[in-house]
Image (cartoon, rainbow, N blue to C red; front, side):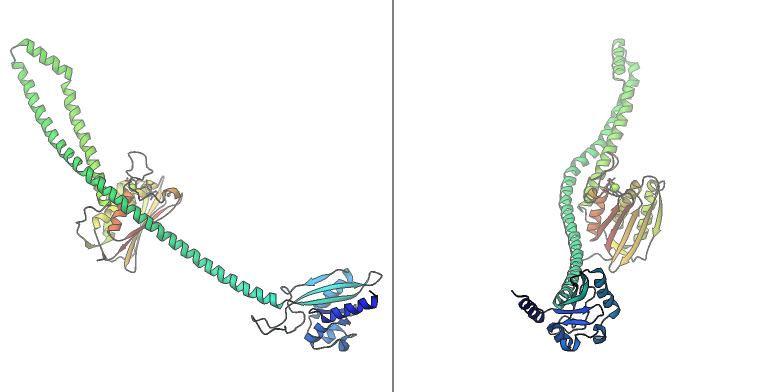
Length: 430
Ligand SMILES: Nc1ncnc2c1ncn2[C@@H]1O[C@H](COP(=O)(O)OP(=O)(O)OP(=O)(O)O)[C@@H](O)[C@H]1O
Ligand SMILES: [Mg+2]
């Protein structure tokens, strides 16, 4: 192709491109102005070529733009501006109906150095691309993302609530089936324990009577005429060590009675947990009174280790079985005291919210490990050494609170402490 043909072709292409193309010389005089620029600026090439860019377009950011162009002349390097940082070089309307609140053409511009044979920059050619669509699209996208972020946060809250509800449900179901089991076990053990206990009483009496009789025989020994028989009796008595036997029999009886009493206590706890004996009297009572009397009872267990702080709110009288609630407070207080290793604080807070009241027992103890938190209400779950805890305290508390149509919440951090909060309805739901 001839070079005239080529330059003709290039001229046509530049004229008909949907891109603004213009060029200036080192004095900022316009040397090229294509059709796109003419259409959007309303000023034609014939009227502009040879004129100063900034005199022809006083609205241009002269200081900035002149520097930008001059840098290309000096550095002989390509430069660029994007719609995101500097959207409007020229205030052009964009060629579509007003959409998305963007009414002026947003532009990406390039600044090309055009060099002569001596490798000096003779002109700077500026191209101007319409990026309005992208800008509108991005604006919409950002809006969608914002909405999504908000929705996600809301969903997160919902998921948390759902998880909590599901956990509560699982816990309630588990406790119900454990309750049945506990009731069954309590019922089965109750009878044998009952007769062993009462037999022990009878046995003790029989033993006493027998020993009484024996000592009478002992006294009568002297009166036996036959010396051989007397010696025989004495040696049999010595062999038996009757003195020790008497003493030890009493000790054995006491120990057995003690053991049986403990088993009875466990059975009673299991029964309370599974609410088998539900024939109690409900009264409107003052919970603060209950907490205070419980504190008096457990004071011995807690006073050496912890300071007790009372932060009581205003409480109405609550329809409840106060002795049973006292049992709950006692178990919580004792657990708190046990959780405190050196010295700490137990804080008792109370308050009312709507139709419910709450009692909170917070300690600065060692906290509950996350893997134990789901199990603490299970009967017989304990982390205490054998013989120290039966693991019935919290399951009992759970059962009693259920019976009151309330709920118990726990929050614990290892090394910081534990808070138990008991919620109770002011009136027993009918
Ligand atoms: N305030 C607390 N701080 C730390 N751990 C606690 C607290 N309360 C309960 N626990 C944990 O929960 C377990 C179960 O408590 P629960 O009261 O049911 O039984 P226990 O105290 O071990 O025995 P029991 O109360 O029958 O004597 C405890 O062994 C302990 O590990
Ligand atoms: Mg306990």
